[in-house]
Length: 322
Image 1 (cartoon, rainbow, N blue to C red):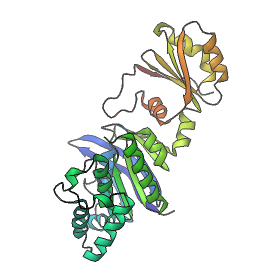
Image 2: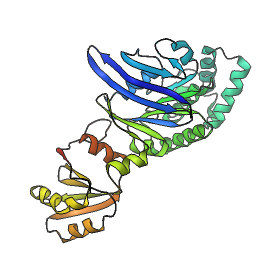
Image 3: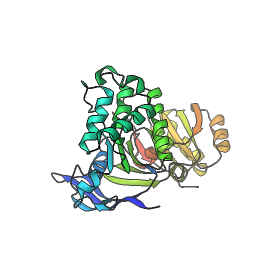
Image 4: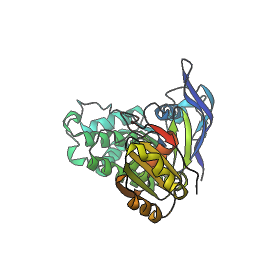
């Protein structure tokens, strides 16, 4: 598929601080590409360079066949941007927010009205079309912000933390809308700290931390490569954690210590490891679950992926891959 975005040794510095420290990636046409990481990872800076808000400090960045340093105007005409914060005109109606935004792109009134009605229907906002934005729910405001980013029929839609602060029901509703947009062939770039969101929506993703890319690939492939199939969460007496790890070291691909919990990463079948846990006198409780992207991030960085805090993980250590 054609490459929509290509970064080579992409860099962005602020007063000498490397917010993005020389990264490479490609985004293919028609896919949902995820940029995953905690606050300060550099993901918002990356998308800000893609939509030509921040100038590039070093390296090259091409968007829709144009160099961001030379053809910003041509790029912006073909981009839709959904920022982290809703910046809607609260005193205007839902419909007016779409029509006024369409005017910024020089769209004729009749065309804008038709597109607005289609988007209102698509996002389930038709019944609220004439209501002031200040009076609709947070989930509706977020859907309206996405609709506004689509009013000029962009070739690429950038969504920066699109569901932050929403309740689970509203979040999943937006996921369904984004899936529908992708099925229609629209290319999506998604930054998020929600692991389930990335797993549900992204075809490919990069995991960033401290301005660099730690891993990249398809979500399922990254989980299998870095962690395996299952994770055993074991509550064990702190003094016996090393003993526990030593007893199962030949069965796991790695482990992580977090307080009184030991996370054991199991490549395939957990049966033999569970037998050892059941026979142990110092294991308090344990649970078996499927591995996920949180575990990948935990293994790569030694800390959890949380919007507010990095977590209280005490150390990082790995067993040899079996």
